[in-house]
Amino acid sequence: MSDLSTARPATEGQTAVKKNRFTTLFMWLAIALILGLSGWGLINNNRVRPEAGQAAPDFDMQFFNGYEWENATEATLADMRGKVIVLNFWASWCVECRVEADLLEQRWQQYRDQGVVFLGIAYVDAEPNSLAYLQEFNVTYPNAPDLGTDIAQNYEITGVPETFFIGRDGQIAHVQIGPVSERVLDGVIGQLIQE
Amino acid sequence: MKQTLFLTRIMPPYTLRSTITAIGILLLLLLAQTAVAQQPVTDDQVNEVAKGLYCPVCESTPLDVCPTQACIDWRAQIRDLLSQGQTEEQIQAYFARQFGDGVLAEPPRRGANLILWFFPVVAVVVGGFFFSRYLRGLKLQQPAPVAEPGQRQETAVLPPTQAPQSDYIARIEAELRRES
Image (tube, each protein chain N blue to C red):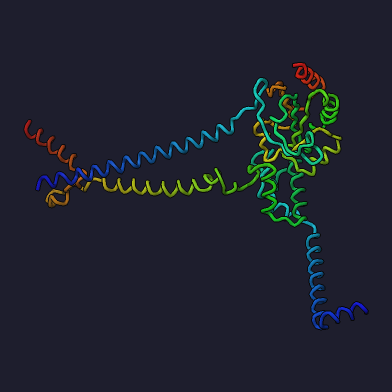
């Protein structure tokens, strides 16, 4: 009789311990999940802009009709490896972009036969407005919309205009925040052509 | 006249009348549809769609109240798309494709976004389950009321989970008695 009375609490105690272990395990899993999600969010929010000396992130482009690159309607940055690339983010609603628009077209005409490609990326811009802007400034170099803002996210741009100068080796040589000047354009492109 | 005679020759007059009536009705419907499509889109209609979108330039600002030039352009584009007969869903899908899912006020229910939609519900249900278990455990661990003098001892018997503690108290009491 006494054996039975002592055995019962022990079994119940073991069950309670098991339940507690399960609850604790679940709590730790929940905490790990919440921390994991928070970490993921922080990593995504704190990505930094690729700077000079780093490889330029690759991306796809679907060019605006009439603004293709070598008659290709789609291309990747990797397709242009071996050329000096001037990657310019702009938008028709951006006042500062208008300051540099004529200069970029002039320099495109000047350098296009020297292995230099100018690429315009329209950032969060309504397509009809983008096309109207390109016509307004007589832009002729390849231009594409930033579909899904994927390119802007990869390059972590903080606004427009921003211009990335990419060397023949695919490395970023210079990042220009704000409108680009003649001095910077000629200086950086001249240096990259000679490399 | 000749044409009518020719037509009456290839089909009976009542069929011809029905055909002409049907074509007339179709033309009227087409005209009505064109008239509806050409009605100017109101600001309220534009804002109703814009409410479901966010400006990606200035964060956390709904498109219907955003004062930037980019948002003014976008609202103009919504107006154009509405006047072309596109629905709210089609316009939102277009903006998501052009500018990313981040412009949607409600994240689409697919891929990793499913976590956003279902995690809170799952967390509340599972959390509630474990909290109720925890409360039940607390209830079971509550000590039984102490027996009043003269009251029968059975009422003060501790539950089985309290047995080790009562043993311990009994041993202490035995020690105290021995010392005194």
